[in-house]
Amino acid sequence: MAGNSERKGAIRGSKKGPTTGTGGKNKKRLSGKGPTPKAEDRPYHAAAKRKKAAEKAKANPRAGTTPRTGTTPRSSAGRNSRIDKPKGEIVAGRNAVLEALRASVPATEVLVARGIDIDDRVAESLQLALHLQLPIREVHRAEVEGISPNSQGIILAIKPYQYSSFEEITQRAKNPMLIVALDGVTDPRNLGAIIRSAGAFGVNGVVMTERRAAAMTASAWKASAGAAARMPVAQVTNLARTIEEAKKLGCFVIGLDGESDESLSGMKVATESLMIVVGSEGKGLSRLVREKCDLVVSIPMNSATESLNASVATSIALFWIDEQRRKN
Image (cartoon, rainbow, N blue to C red; front, side, top):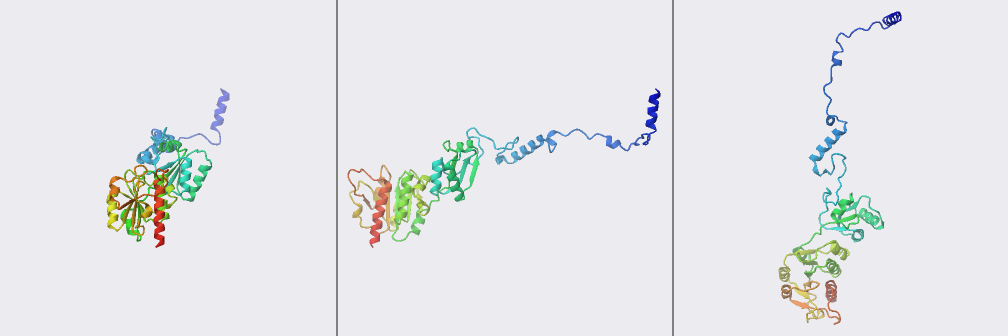
């Protein structure tokens, strides 16, 4: 058509002129770039990030993250938890943790569940922990409950007690020595109260058996009212053998037994080096330990009272000995 020919002529006659070829100069530009890389090989693709996270988790299994989200995995009851459980004893529950922190029980850290309801007890516990410069670790509630189901969302990890030895106690003791030996005391509160009385009346150290006896737990530490930090406590495997060692060092061994006919007030060796042996809450002195004692005494009391608590009896005996030593 005429109109078309005119239009084509107009194009050919434009300022730019006719289009020419490149002479093969753009052949390289038109070549393909090869196959598209896999999603996991593209640095900014989500699949590549998941692959990198998976490789990192495989190299460090304790990292505690999942490849997909990078968050700490949950556990239904703490059984599959990756939390590092505290070593040694723990104190669980809001009241128990608060009381332990108030008593300055040696601890390593505080574990708190995420999203815990902060009441006055938790708030004070956290303030005390900060004051004592204790680490505070926030973990999933399921992990806390996996350590202690009755934790109420907070746990205090207790530092293992550093026991002394009988040799260290006797080497540091002043003359005349005064040592308290416990023959099967099983109540940690009694143990703590005895240590408290020992600290009050100049005892050089407390000796107890490793088996079938209370240990220096958080309850014992609280009952000692801090005296456990100053009073050396030793564990021995055989109390009868330790009594023999004390005798060789010049100690008179005095046993406390409510059924003895000898009265504490009649004891004539209060100013000498002594080892006071206290029996268990129920059975008293064991047969072998009783035979090893140089003297077994009782504390006179009203016949209506069957017996005294082990810690109370120890306190009375130590007070009387201290009074006799003060007179000289």
